[in-house]
Image (cartoon, rainbow, N blue to C red; front, top):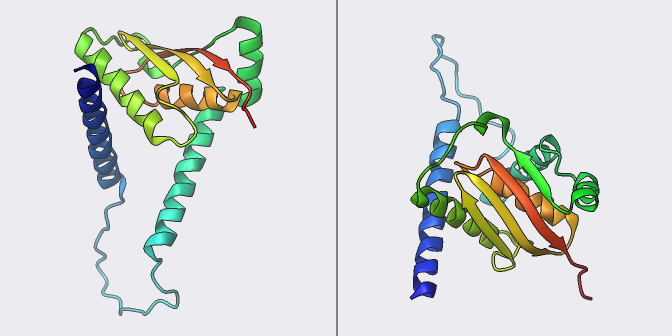
Length: 178
């Protein structure tokens, strides 16, 4: 029963994430405006980009965006390693979300499910190796990851989830086995 409920929640989260992503893409596209002068149609010397090229460009844009956020949130491997050695945990708070609270258990479950789904979609993170607890938008991550860069990635993904205002990572970095 628990497994079926967990799979249902993961599916719902993945569907919600996909819907959110598509809505975000629709609203972020610039709207073309009509000009008052009629211009003759010119044939482009460059052929239209293929689907593969567009996907590659979009993946690069997403990668750059995530890298910028990780730097902005002080989630570089050096900063994570330093903080882990000093305090044994990583704590980050989104400034704009400070003071906001999510009061219901339903929202906490939604946040956990969305983060788990994001981890499941990521090739480097293991949704099963990272345990997530949430209370009023404050997320605590515990478990094991292979390196400090993955701690940063896990914290970044959690912070980038709607409703999350604070993330504490109590993740243990374990050496990768060859």
